[in-house]
Amino acid sequence: MTPKILIILFLASLITSCGNEEKQSDAYGNFEADKTFISAEAMGKILEFKIEEGDIIKKNEIVGQIDTLDLYYKKLQLQSQIEAVAANFVEINSQLEVQKQQLENIEIQKNDIQEIYDIVIHNKTIRVVWSVERQLVTTALVP
Image (cartoon, rainbow, N blue to C red; front, side):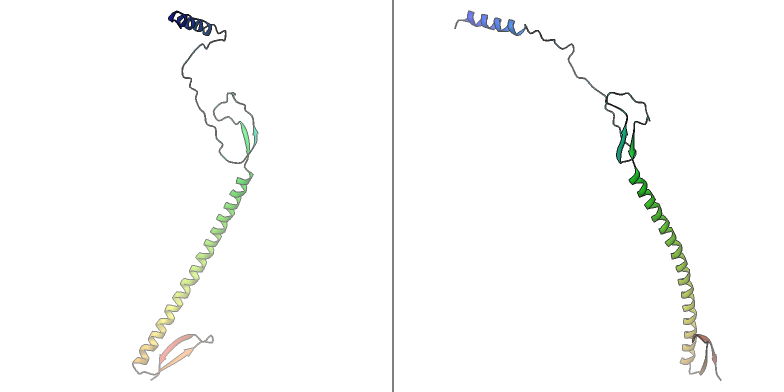
C-alpha cells in the first residue's frame, strides 16, 4: 500500500467517526452529593414510613413509626428486677441487724465462760444459775 492510500483511509475513518448524531454531554468533571444518614432512636419493626427518595424534610421531622413494644416490655422487666433487688436489699439489712445482735449475745456468753474458766483455773468453787431455757444467767462464788 502506498502512503497516499493510507492517508486517505485515515482521513475517511476520521470523518466518519466525527459524524455521530448522538447528543454530547454538556459538562464533564466530578459531581459531589451530600450524604445524609438517617437513624432511629429505637430499634424495631417499621410500621410506617412517610417519605420517598428525593423528598425534602426538615430537621427533627417525624417521618415514620417503629414498633417498640418489645423495648417497652424489656423496660418493664428491668424495672421489676430493680424493685426486687431493692426489696432484697432491705431484707439483707434486717438480717444484718439480727446477725449483729446474735454476735453481741455470743460475745456476752464468751465473757461469761471466760469468767468461769478463770475461776476454775484458780481452784475456786462456783455455783452456776441457769434459766429455764438452759442459758447461763449468773455465776457466783461459793465460799
